[in-house]
Amino acid sequence: MKGPAGPLGARAVATITGGSVEGQRVSGKVLPSVSDGWIQRSDGVMVLDVRALFQTGDGALIYMTYEGRLHAAPEIAARLFNPETQESVHPADYYFRTHPVFETGDERYAWLNKIIAIGVGQLRPLLRSLSMGFCSKWRDQSRVACQAMCSAMKVEMK
Image 1: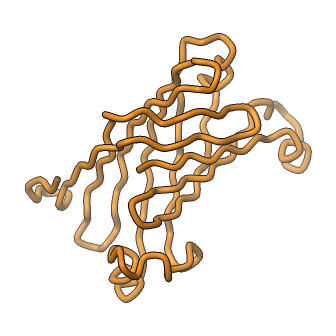
Image 2 (image 1 turned 30 degrees about the vertical axis):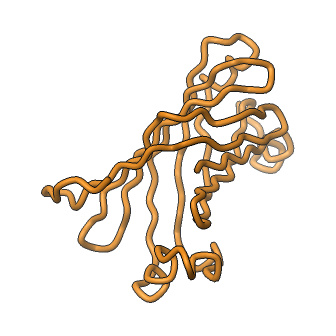
């Protein structure tokens, strides 16, 4: 649903109807009735504001929010936002980056409350895919050592 254009740009909101979460430490399903919002700025950049709730395979509820940016050259954007040509656009041809944060009251996943993930997104027809990496044990270790302890997760939302 498109809203009115304001001083920051044209605002729009969509409902997420479901999806999946797959990862080394977390997996489950995205629950419906959450929001996916964005502002289309005059410079072509989409400012993302997404709020999603997912349920793990063992029943835990996890709330995820992220802000991010999505932009592409005008000729790429024309294909990217057309459902008939979207699959022909390679993710390397556009910029889709986010920084998800999580919230849960389930102690098994309390480590998620302490991290910020870095996400790289991909648009596909009727689906938004976000692959993210996070490191819950950073401390003072070198970047190489930290990468060995990092985890990955993929979230797909319809």
